Image 1 (cartoon, rainbow, N blue to C red):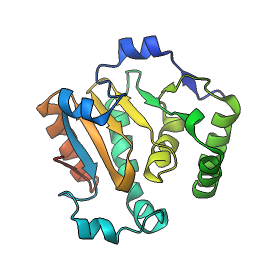
Image 2 (tube, rainbow, N blue to C red):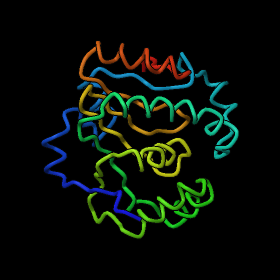
Image 3 (tube, helix red, strand yellow):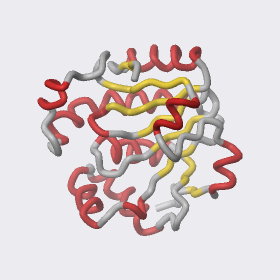
Length: 194
């Protein structure tokens, strides 16, 4: 298998990525225009949250996963021509998480995941995002295996993987938020307020 994992150093990442939200969500919410990419138009009520079975990904997340895949493909296409990045803290995954990944991923994604494990990415979590690893990186988040963050540069957006299919997103401007909100709606998703 060709080397589809192209790590970049932290210094290069810092230099190239404008919407850096790497330390905390609160930092991102304070610093940038933001929202939550979600299958729901409004924040869920306590009762709705209680109805989502904890740890039963097949019943909720996978049901909506294709919407996120369609959205991220469109974001990827829109940002083609720029180097875009993902952080993947694979070293923080414990052996149980790796076994869960192998259990929850389909065959094609398992092969890519195993190659990522085999090659390793040292202490550097930043990879150049490409079409071959795009869906795997998203599925690691949608299936709550290992949360990744995707950084796009042409029309800046940062997408932070999170629980319950509610992904914080960060923008450079309200115009970009409106643009991506329309794109999300076309994919059956919403960018709602926090």
